[in-house]
Length: 404
Image 1 (spheres, rainbow, N blue to C red):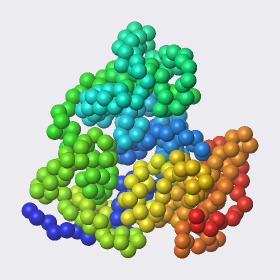
Image 2: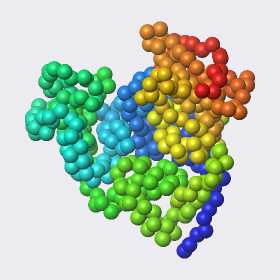
Image 3: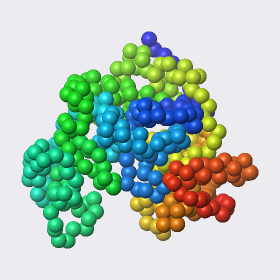
Image 4: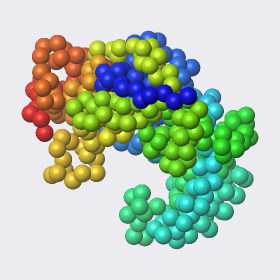
């Protein structure tokens, strides 16, 4: 059965996207450990990043969806309950352990890809270290890179200059033989995956066709609407061609429909696909909370910058790797989401030596007025962030900077 293209208004597109990304739920509902797991499952993963300007990305992403989130719940799910594990999607991420079988095909591909790639630019000796570390961990148990890295001269210490042992540990982790059993001072501690991943997930195998179907189907559920390229990129488990073939098959069966998503900035509508029940999903999507929320730069809602600009009319980039003199806003600036639109951004940092949340600058988007109510909403969010990161006070002079 052929279904004509559906037109989705920008308001409906924003509401659906916020709903599937977990930003429409009541942010003050009591959240227990099972609830944390449910959020991670609904998102599919939360990105892990080492930058700790306010709080590390994985904690902030979860806090943005529920202010009663407790860090220790995520830690227990990872390190004791083993219902979550760490590996890669498009980057390092925390993923439900039940999804581990779908990563097996990626592990096989990484064994070839990483060997070939890392041979070209990593320090010599990492391949020899693989066998040594595999045997050592099997016999002696979990280790950190610092436990096995040999002293050497001339090393810069950056990610581009790993010692052979560190490279080997990352290789064994990225290819599924090792798993991160816990972290200490944010340093990964590696053990055999079979000791970390629950056996009901570690021993399960899924054929490639079923794995592709799962990855594409579950990506689209979490995206609401998407191109085949966006579907492929969500988990980074399937190729663009595999996603394209899946979309064609599902469209022919009537399970998917073509949609045009109106742009927030008046640009040409964007073509995508959605499940055939997309209209019902839109009608069931609640209005998001009216409060202002400062999202993490690695939040899944804003990961795809082109999609973000089309749906929300918000142009954002993280300027961590931009030379300071060329930054438009700042090193680590948080987008401000109010209801269903982005109204600005804030440059804030937990200055731990002074125990304050220092707000260096606030910018509102063109056309967004800094009225009394909006300032109140922003002040309330800054105080929530203060309590979240454990600062004693918020330091902000109340000024709004001109747009960068």
